[in-house]
Amino acid sequence: MNNVVNKLLPTAGKALVTVMAVMFGLAHFMNAEGLASMVPVPGGVLWVYFTGVCLIAGGVGIFIPKVARLAGLLLGVLILIFAFGIHAPKLGAEGQAGQVAMISFLKDLGLAGAAWLAAVVSDLKR
Image (cartoon, rainbow, N blue to C red; front, side):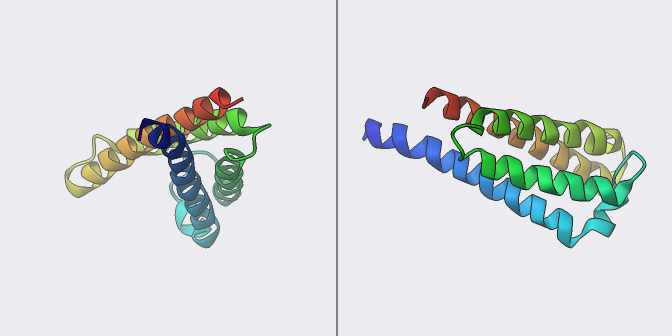
């Protein structure tokens, strides 16, 4: 049983991080205009497309042995930038906007951690 868990959980965890990253990346392309309003720096739509590509590349890269560690590390950094650059500034908002910001902030913290764990798991399998 322990052997199954030790083999299955790391692969399942990496797969879930990959699904999240690819789906969020695709969402960046499907709703670029809507997401552009959230970008705190000039060049909104360009950054949305760029981060969409980065999310997809990071998610897929987790399963490519030669780049898995780097992909997980960079994916985690990107998601952490989202947490602190987009969601953290809205944490003081009143009512539902503040609650949504908190949920989004904490979600991104957890996802960044999951990406980093995927990077470490990929590194251990070498």
